[in-house]
Image 1 (cartoon, rainbow, N blue to C red):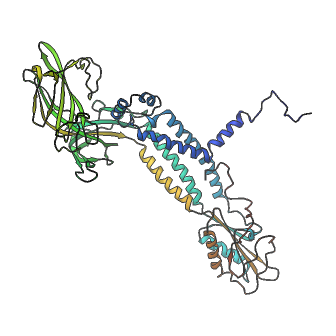
Image 2 (tube, rainbow, N blue to C red; image 1 turned 90 degrees about the vertical axis):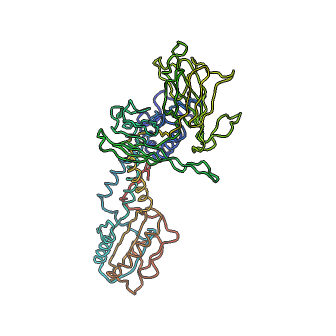
Length: 573
């Protein structure tokens, strides 16, 4: 004989259907919903800390250049496209399913509650947490009718049946709960729609330049499944000038105080509808369904290059990119049409720094560095190269980088040729290559053009979620019963009882107010109050007529036979 379980080769456990049912219950439980919400918030952190392709591809490329060791790992983990990544989508899709599995049954359950009458009065009202009783000479039926009228006046759902009045109030608590969950659904739906039907583009413009919102004139563009380059909103935008202001004294010297891009624009193709506008940080300009955000600012030195014959082969403003908080900027100037030098086709390239506020002398360790982001004392530092830029190969190049593979750096007196120029100064290039003149500088601004149709849905969902949460937290669900019973020796016993679905002193206050109002129709008699015939356990009757009491050690309240909201183990309330 043994007590060991009998081994069997047959199937054991709950089976495939049982596992599916268990998984569904876990997915639609409050615990898993909170975990998914936490994971969604956690998953959004990399999107805030790491540059995203959908916002600024240039920043992504710059970040990859500065972090070559981890960039390939981040690329495989889709950390540069967090909000469209597989793992981020999986989290919010599971959250969608979890919310749907909660909302649908709760909604049908609540509809059933609204269609049903309030739960009938329990047999023994003295066991309720809040109880009051008194004796009156009024007719029992009249007292019940008066209580029914008073409760209806207080906007309770009341039902008079079986010699008692049953009333319930606070359904907005469940309404708020459902609105909160539906709003989360709308919020996630707005984000999902935005990711499926949105697009972003980038454009850098020097002051005085403009562009039409087409794919050929954008610096970069990222579309989505339902929004491509052919769906771009048609408009024209021109940067007239850029205003920047920095703090000049105090502990926060150099801190930005104003960035304003003054623009002119028109929607569609009708130039007669030209409008003036301004774009500031966090204050975008909306044009025909797209929002234009200001995301960057810098300086563009204006340089004129002349070849050995003295012909102007290049002139214009070239944007240099900021490298630090004082806007020390680096950039390159490519002269593809230089012409011939010593009978050979030659191209020239220049790399260097633009310093808005240059020091008197450069530090040997750090090199050229600006002292202040404002243009207090601008200077341009350049190196020169000659040879083949590779621009005729047909391969794309980064306009902010100089490929020196087929270039030779110019030498002067046996050293690398370099120069520091102030606006208006010129540099005679060595070996008769011509000259470079630093004419001055302009400011540039970079913009993000965003089309996101789901933002309004997400915003409405967020607002409704807050309102629903307020309702679910501050509205109290409560029930009141009134029973008037004729006594055998004459007179009527009036009993009032209340039960709150959550801990609150409001139910006691409402019961006391109802008892006072009911005195007009059922005034308390001076004779001592008899005990209720139905009373089996509970506290003694009230000491005085009309007094309400809450027993110190009440037994567990007896729930009505047909509760308004059945207990749900998977409820998210």
